[in-house]
Amino acid sequence: MTQLYAVALNTFKETIRDRVLGVIVIFALLMIVSSLWLGSISLGQEARMMKDFGLLAVSFFGLIVAVFVGASLLHKEVEKRTVFVILSKPVGRAQFIFAKFLGLAVTLACVLAGMGLFLFFADWIVARSPAPLLVAATALIYLQLLVVVAVTMALSTVTSTILASVLGITVFVAGQLSRSALSLTELGQSAVVKGLAWVVYVAIPNLNAVDIKPAVVGEISPDWALVAAWGGYLAAYTVLALVLASWSFSRKEF
Amino acid sequence: MRRVAAIVVVAACLSAVIGFQITREVNAAGNPRVFVPSPRFFEKLAPSFRTTIADAYWLGVVQYYGEHVDGDGRLDSLPAMLDVVTKLSPHFIEPYLFSTFALVDAGEPQMAYDVLERGFKANPRDWRLPFQLGFMAYTYGPKETKARAAAKWFAVAGKLPGSPPFVPRLAANMLARGGEREKAALMWGQIYTQGDKYARAKAVVGLEAILPPGNEARTKALVPLYRTMPRKDFNALVEDLVAGSTP
Image (cartoon, rainbow over the protein chains, first blue to last red):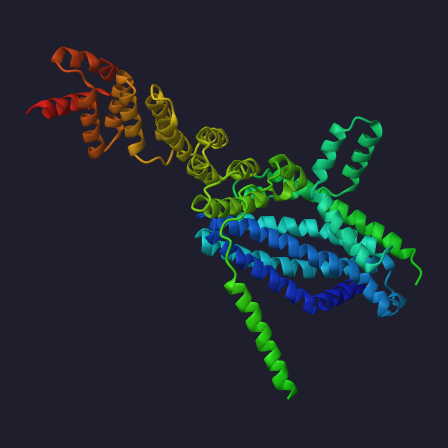
């Protein structure tokens, strides 16, 4: 447990000090502020624009952090050869993977909390009333990104950093389209296409299921029980991806 | 020497870049025909970001309308753009209201009416939509039925929460104009019962305008009000009518 904590803390410190992270966060905050300008040309829809484009910025920049940092996390350790020092200590490979994930998860939590709170207060000023759903939406984006981090880490154990990043982004995009894969199963005439669509639907994390952006702008009222259930599904998916990453990492020869 | 040369090059490039940009003729209006994919395409492509896409198109609609309405006057792609916004975000009220004027400018009043009707189906608690429908029905409807159609929508709007007090009065006036005197009288009676002093005065004036001349005919016309209004309010109304008709 101490080793897990030590590696996680170290990963957190290492990633949070990354200057690129600061630049990404600044860009995200700028994009949130720029939605004020978008609001000014929207015929009185400032608050709606702020919420929608603000959450888009949180998702987009959060994804960049999750994917690029997640993909390089293990490779960096191997390239700097620090992995040998760590693994020579009583730290299991699975423990190492989980600790790395935890460290990045905390960093991602800090980044998203910063962006989410900034958006929440900026929206409060514009709309003149607080929108607690913005906080919930940011938390659910965080949950989506944790899945992406875990999958990207699993992929980075078998591919290069760049390919893992690209695949990580692909998983995020495909996860948003999960329902479309399901509709393909209904449209397909051949059994093969139907079967393939089912495999894709089951294999790809259904990130869209915990999306409450339409609720934030008043389009729907969220079914919290359903969102919680899908949240549990995503947590289980994250654990599965991490187990896969550990298994793949344990078979790796340096 | 090198430094001076570098400064001269930078200054020359900078003035060229800025000078070129600001001396070009600004093309105010772009092409009035722009490609707009179907809302279904966006629903399938990015279900998680459908409201964001709707917002982006809403900004596009505002820009497009502003660019063309005072320029070439062509709003060819406006209906399709508004369709994307309203179908991707059916509870976003502004585009429906905007379509009342914008689609009329685009020469599509019937489409504006249809969009508003669709908006009201999706948002049956928003009084502004039936109010605009009444406005559209009266402005662009067939001469013989427009007042009655408008009255129907104004009456619906008047019953919804948040509607201003003048909406039921508008409905009553429209009913009278459409020849539905009895319904108009009933509506004025309702306005009289529920309204303040100002609304009551307006109801008396409205009733005066539609009640037939002669005591017997007037009394007969007031019978439906007698049946539907609370006794106290009815008596007060009759007193006001008598006082109003006394020279």
